[in-house]
Image (cartoon, rainbow, N blue to C red):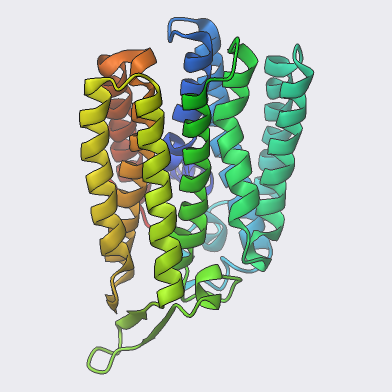
Length: 336
């Protein structure tokens, strides 16, 4: 295998295209805590956010494959551990070696504050719990949401002179966003797989289509819809609350209103009953996550400014498009 193909295989294993899911949170946590982006510590936390994603998702890829879930998933037969492009023993050594290195790096960033060290331990424990136990419990969204939210909160707590209410609202919104991402979006994405699923327990399923045997019919339930819309609206309220508590900045309000509208639109699309074409649902899921995520980010405009926010958002989209195209062949909706 050539260097390009080998690089592509490792990037797939680490799901490098979605680095934008965690790296901006670490960046914003440090920037808000310090009150500026012009500080080397912001860059150090951005680097941690990148490493956190690569290591955490790489471990998740390996563990899911090792336990047999991805081996039996028809949607993931092109992943590198299934194709043999990466050998399991090689993946294990790289992933756990990287995990140890990242933990040492995190300790170097936080050792001056015992509470931050304790929160770091909680973050690592929560991430490990999700990676190893997530497929077996309907409440898998809780540990990983704790871990992801702490990526934002730890650097903020480390540098802030006091805990601001609007930042706590941001942290709560991040938590709800990740609960939705795993408990709703993730369960829809994997609704046809044999694993623990909160949505399945609430009556959501895919049944055969009468006229198109290759296409299923997505069937939801009242309980599932109430939960999904409740979480989406709660995220919206916390995000806009963070913006309002920070002084009703007109630019933040306008941007937030636009992002909130798009988030709700794609929330509705992804939850609609009807033909279940997985690739189309993935587009709706990805769009909902992107707009909901950036809605929370927009509360930071008071610190990083509109230009800083736009630059961050453009950088996220450019990175996602280029890396997704390189490793999956699609600009924004990778084959996951």
